[in-house]
Image (cartoon, rainbow, N blue to C red; front, top):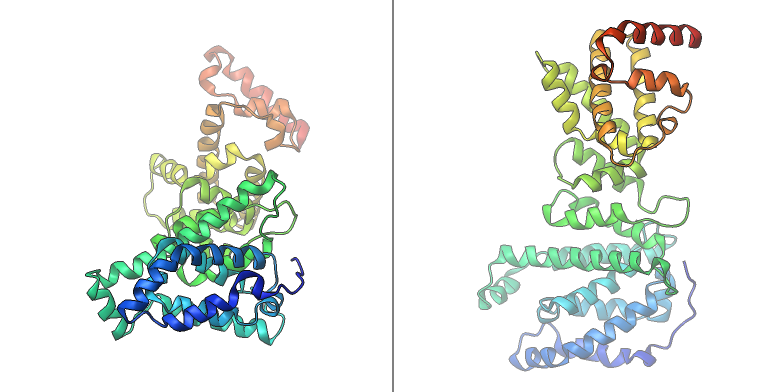
Length: 377
């Protein structure tokens, strides 16, 4: 995280906008409402400048450079005419997100976190005065809440997309810690449908470093919500979750096995349909590294259950689904990527579809496989 030196607030016209926010209050008079509307374009530019100055700072450094930033942002967040304007609302939220710390290092950062939580809660809740204001605009209260939430989400998604686009440019990207902070802030609202774009955007976020960008709590929560069907993500987002958080993949395999074992009277056709719907065969064919994880997991379960017939049936069904998908993959990858420890001639023999072998050669084909097995064992 960049440790920025103190920036004179006067260079941004900070005092002017602080005085304006005090003058406006909650914009309860027609004059103040009109003044807010006239100043919104310049306010947007000011907030963009502030965001540019603090986006790479730690919270403590940002508060040192702009000691009154909390008071200014807080007053603007309480102004319904500022919050109701999409772009100003987005600019305002961008500045607020920058002051949040996933791991507070001191009392100041912890206090800032508490303040942000309270501020966000106040922005998505309304008191009687707010209700009267919303009614005066003939705007349904439920839609008002939804619009605020969508604005928050779109603001963060835009930041994320801009950040990913700047990867190959010379511009400074947002620090990884910023996205880790946002992933933690998402925890209480992950299951809301309106938050799905942000969850998928975060799962697409990649850093050049070796360390995970997102918080483990976020990845674990998304994984649990998927298994409990509390959230619906696109196929690509699910795959990205498995690629960056292997415990989620293992939980999915275990959940699949448990559901198949407890499912009464499942035919082979139904069994393969359920396995195919889990996306595991397709992911295994597309990503050899994930196939090896799943294969290893199956081996462990097979040993722990002493080769239980149901487990064997499930593994056989999964293998059939996997091979079907693998043969349909347009860009065939070397089989050694999937089976690095096995002789390739043996793997090819096992993967050969019986329909591709002439009936008169079936016996010899099986004898060849048996001889290979004897040599391996």
